Image (cartoon, rainbow, N blue to C red; front, side):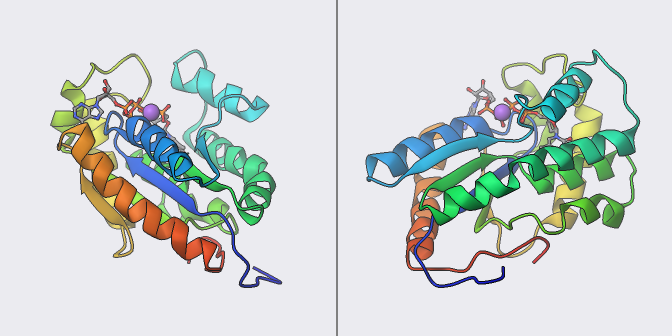
Amino acid sequence: INGANTESRGACIVLEGLDRSGKTSQSTRLVSYLEGLGHSAELWRFPDRTTSVGQMISSYLSNESQLDDHTVHLLFSANRWQKRSLMERKLKAGTSLIIDRYSFSGVAFSSAKGLDFDWCKAPEIGLLAPDLVLYLDIPPEKAAERGGYGTERYEKLEFQRKVADCYKVLQDPSWKVVDAQLPIEEISKQVQEVGLKCVEQCLKGKQLSLLWS
Ligand code: T5A
Ligand code: NA
């Protein structure tokens, strides 16, 4: 980022995983934990269904509307671009953002439909790169047993298997992979440990970078 300096800032921490892997449970807990230690932290999620683009996505996900696969991919990306400047302002103001899904979901879910992998990555170029990606790892069969899949478009075992394969292609050694079948408390402990370490690094002035770096 131009003009990047070594000033203290908030951390951008992304949670990824299959549907029902426990992202919402863990991101909520991580925010409470960081706040409890006196850090400023906010819970974000993508899709952000509150924006106009987010409402189109939401109606698509609940099967109330049909959209071409490329179109919906670009909407998910646009939904992140809508929040990009706010995201940068928050981080620079010292607030850590704990984000439930991000560009990695965008690429994994769309490429699982058969869209070209590099085409899927392209519209994410220039978004802020997270400081940490926590991947909640669960076999698709186990995730399907949890709380019952609802009626949302992607909540089908066959499709989730393909998504899991696409996440494997995306994954890099910097990701922290957590066994999502452990008890919630156990996962929380691991998430808190790496999450806090990341927040502390950003407080010391770790530079913000952009996707895909
Ligand atoms: N998508 C998203 C795209 O296609 N492109 C994109 O760019 C983006 C951003 C959005 C959908 O859109 C797709 C991906 C998704 O299909 P969503 O609103 O994020 O979906 O919904 P999900 O991710 O599917 O959220 P879920 O609520 O299904 O799953 P979570 O958040 O992973 O799981 P959570 O914490 O709600 O837990 C699910 C259940 O499991 C239990 C919980 O109590 C709950 O009942 N649970 C555990 N049980 C046992 N052991 C544990 N350790 C547990 N942790 C949680
Ligand atoms: Na969720």
